[in-house]
Amino acid sequence: MNIAVIPGDGTGPEVVAEGLKVLKEIARLEGFSYDLETLDYGGDRYLRTGQVISDEEVQALRRYDAIYLGAIGHPDVKPGILEKGLLLKIRFDLDQYVNLRPVKLFPGVDCPLKDKGPEHIDFVVVRENTEDLYSGAGGFLRKGTPQEVATQEMIATRFGADRCLRYAFQLAQRRRAQGKPGQLTLVGKTNVLTYASDLWFRAFNEMGAREFPDVKRDYNHVDAVCMWFVKNPEFYDAVVVPNMFGDIITDLAAMIQGGLGVAAGGNINPDPGGVSMFEPMGGSAPKYTGQNVINPIAAISAMSMLLTVTGELKNDDRLVRAGRRVEQAIMLTCPKMESQNAGRMGYTTEQVGELVCEAL
Image 1 (cartoon, rainbow, N blue to C red):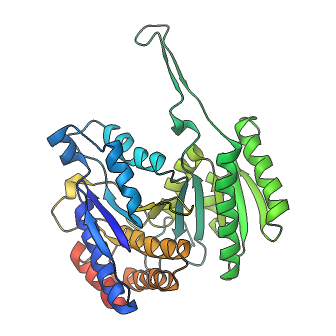
Image 2: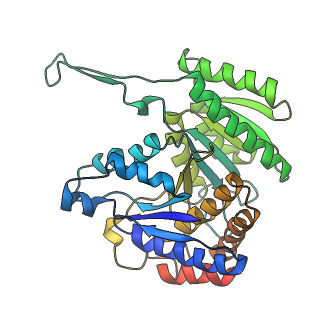
Image 3: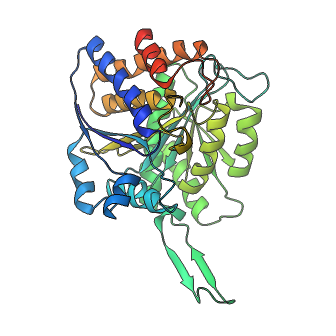
């Protein structure tokens, strides 16, 4: 594999280092090779040059098999500049139209839900990643006056819904083959958003009936899913959701799996020749920079995803096996940690990476 590494800001380089440490060990054990190129995109570069990332630099990312990202967010850079200028630009320009968020409670990780354990929380959210309110359609009228008007348009296309839904249905089928329920739940708001949500609802049921009759279909309003994630997370297997609602419910999902310190995600372009980006869900946590106390489990989980998803897309069983083996090593490591919070893990950032390598 040829991997672009963007360590990013704050504690990003520290957790990325542990993910790469685990990659080196699993590559040795499973017998595959890889090349890395580290890129300096992030807050420090922006402060030094005034540039986040150019069109040419984004296009150059197409030559890699995957992108491994640490964290973006710098205390000296105005919020939105790096997030929109780097994260959203890469997602949109490389057409990473699926945001994939496994929600899995690892053994030994504290869950805020009463009487819920790893056997209850093991589902995956497929979030559409390039449309909806994030498309940037809208603007201001009479900005700065008492009559100011702001519009932000929710964009839904049948093309965008269909390709995200197809990925989600296929994922549900794969989970069923692994012994999971194989159920797919659509999340929307059909009782109020009678255009955009209706498009998704019709596309979901038409595709399911026509192409995936073996996948059980279910539907939840977005406000209802926020209740049921908390009350009965064991009900869910695979979830598919438009962009904005997906952004909200995946943060809720991260908390029921133990917090952002253990949550990882991928921005996926599953098409032939597509390039996907994998990252921990936690932010750059600048106040912990350089202290060797930040939890690297989410970044190591992102590496597990990078291996598994890239292997699935390239039909490379070694990479799939390697990714799953890394996840198993994480599950053996978490019970040894006092907690999954920065500064109270019982180990340093580097020691957690070493524990995962030993568990491999």
